[in-house]
Amino acid sequence: MKKIEDNNTMVFIVDIRADKKKIKDAVKKMYDIQIKKVNTLIRPDGTKKAYVWLTPDYDALDVANKIGII
Image: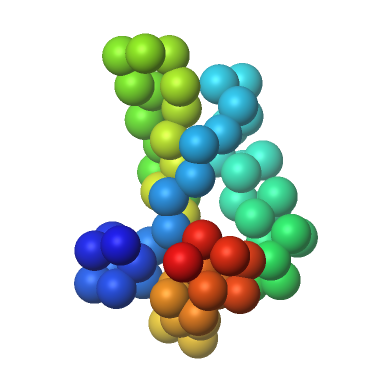
């Protein structure tokens, strides 16, 4: 929740084989939003997290509310 409010960032668990471009394209297409940047990390348990920064034109809190995260 803190990332959403402070950094205009959304966090997703993604497939381990997904690269940043695929993640960016998928999120852009699914939620019809513009993305500034994507960072990824692989957790010790083998799952992959994607941190998706939205452009200032979009509010991550509104997007999260629209898709049912909060």
